[in-house]
Amino acid sequence: NAGVTQTPKFRVLKTGQSMTLLCAQDMNHEYMYWYRQDPGMGLRLIHYSVGEGTTAKGEVPDGYNVSRLKKQNFLLGLESAAPSQTSVYFCASQGQGNQPQHFGDGTRLSIL
Amino acid sequence: AQSVTQPDIHITVSEGASLELRCNYSYGATPYLFWYVQSPGQGLQLLLKYFSGDTLVQGIKGFEAEFKRSQSSFNLRKPSVHWSDAAEYFCAVAPSGAGSYQLTFGKGTKLSVIP
Image 1 (cartoon, rainbow over the protein chains, first blue to last red):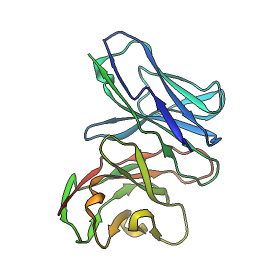
Image 2: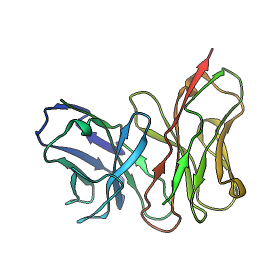
Image 3: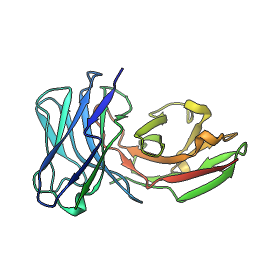
Image 4: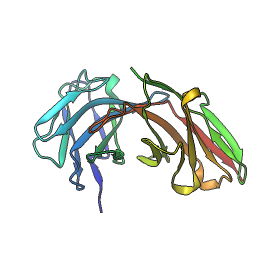
């Protein structure tokens, strides 16, 4: 049972490059989320989705875009990477009703 | 907007000793409350959650937490710590209600365990 799978696990980018992080869940969950984790900051919500084809902004959305074309996948894009986006990115999914969010193992992204 | 405070950045306890990690939240109504644990290089694992009902919540790995509305607190406890409990612990809060919710996390408490 894979749960929430994030790819890639590690990536190094140069400033100005673009990339897409993929989150896939096999639990048929309706809701999906992208967070970033920075030292001493806890996790902060970037964007989320309440269903296929829908997305919404979280606490720190600037510089990121997302898409949810398929229910099981939630993509996070960086169009022009900046050093301030160096972070660990976590994806989570959640079923309907009073359900907890389930997290992936994270993607470590460094931008030089 | 809700907020979460974990007053202790780092706690060190001896193996076998009891543990209490503090969490205070700010929210206008009764929120959903969570404790997650993160081992180095890993994702977050849910320890326990409170949605409603009994204010003393039992979780995995022998952890429990108590919701105290009057103190806006949701402290995590364990009677006897094991070396494998060394990790970082995050308290989180979300507005109550059906459907999707946005978690607000505290900054975390790192737990070190002395053999």
